[in-house]
Length: 423
Image (cartoon, rainbow, N blue to C red; front, side, top):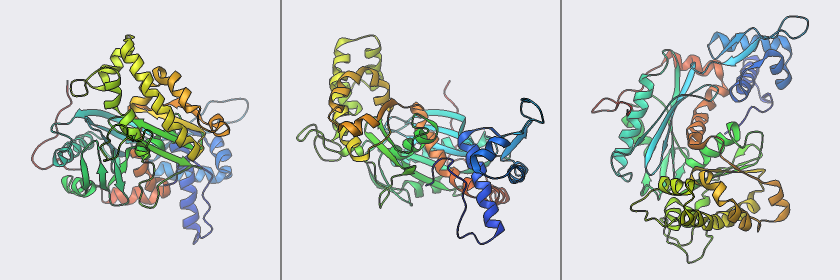
């Protein structure tokens, strides 16, 4: 997956003017999608194209509705350069984030704009795959029904906290959901009528894509992202590219062993990082019972200065730092982004975390800034959308014209209408 705006694409194997023009349109739209509105002069500087080429390309993108042009501000003599901006309602993605407690959903428009956002608690136990599929399909249908008329839907992308095989979207295992070899993409495709592409991805991978392009990792080519929830997920961007591995499973950071013989993990091992710093471990360390309390209770206790909760969170921070030291030594990132529970509790964990994180090799540790997520709970939704934007960014005009020719809305799931938003 190509990330970021990057330099203009000039294919050595281009077969002729059509291929060259498609690559040039891609370079301009990618620049606007990631960087936001820019003057034609800015685009000239960013792409290296001449002014007349940029003018022709932005006019072509405007013709199919992907961008709009408006007069810029006059500075000095001469005519102002036109400002070009992506049209967020021209194309959108239905992005969903499945966690142990709920499903988040967003319609994300071109340019990364969140057009609709909602979150629903599971109606059944999250281990009930059929129930989760129905909830996801219902949310997708509801958002699509409220999409701007004429907006092209590029597909449905779902974030799952587990090992997801690529490219078929088989969830090999998701311990926090108690799923094993679940063909989630196929099930969701059937539930939504098969009218839209369906993609399933790992939550850590999607989180690091989002933070790299639009969050706390923006501007860095080497990013490590760690998300704390019921489990612990992670993703890695190396030299601007998502690290996938041969089966798409790279980044399962939650199952590095930090404490041999420690707490039992849902994966079957003991002392996994996930078992020591996941939500259940933090709740116990804060003096609460995970069967009776959730992480929000701990966050509330910490906010009012509950000494037992603060001390427990800090103790957990020692294990967070231990795992991060190992990962930083392995990947040598420029920035480490902490999301989910870890991001929320980082200020409280920081003193103890820093003490064990200091075990990372000095030259490597000095290069890796520790920061909280810039996108929070929206990271997986933003990252999921980027997956589906890939085609329109690669071939803007061809993709839009093809989809408009055969456009179809996502139908409501069989057996009922989508639920209304909670009051």
